Image (cartoon, rainbow, N blue to C red; front, side, top):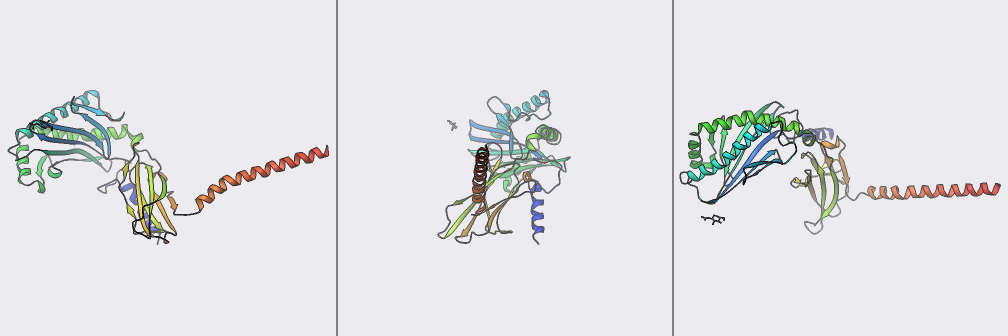
Length: 337
Ligand SMILES: *[C@@H]1O[C@H](CO)[C@@H](O)[C@H](O)[C@H]1NC(C)=O
């Protein structure tokens, strides 16, 4: 009875980073995308931000003053030659300038009002370890606006007639659409495979979590908040549960998985219980780095203190006995002489 849920849980972990449920041979990230955020503050003031990401790991920045890419990892260039990178970076530089000018030029046609924010994401994802799927999506003011499907602009339902008008304009720029198509279906997959290989020592690393328990502020009088902290693990997928004996406690509350400064992750999982009902509770941590050896921390379990006492007192005690025996033997030899 118990084995089945546990097996299912173990199966969950390797697939948890795999949003679309496809099998893949790579461990670690499987997609690369560039993000572009433009803040149009007023008719003369615009701020643009660019960045490159392998899922939740940023590997590129963009210096918008000089129009150059910032490579945040020693392997951020993948296997592209300097010549090809220069060409792509130049393409982005021109795109940033053109994008800003075109939006300002079409400002009244698109019925925009200052200030507004445009967010764009474009990239490719590896499926089954070989085929890739590309995507391009834009949002206006944080709401889906348009996307690119089969190399044509598709207005989002939330974008209304403005998104339809934008797509009508966009479709006139066939040259631009062709460049985007090449970038998404050719450049991006080649870059993704190269960068996953160049960075594999870091991307496929396994770092074990540390876990500890503490108590938080009680939610209600007569209650206890038990906190299970799990920190320093990589990659991100992790399963942390409060258990009563072998059963997952239904009141388990999981926080967000937060980044540590060193690129590893941190998670807090809490449990509210009535005072006096904390017997037999433990926090269980499953992570790919643990190789099936789950971390289990028992709430208020005396074992940890007992182990410390034994670990310090027992060796000291043995040492004292040895010294005493040695002394007694030496004395008896001296007595014989
Ligand atoms: C545009 O915004 C910037 C920054 O807030 C401000 O300094 C500038 O005066 C504004 N310009 C106009 C024309 O409103």
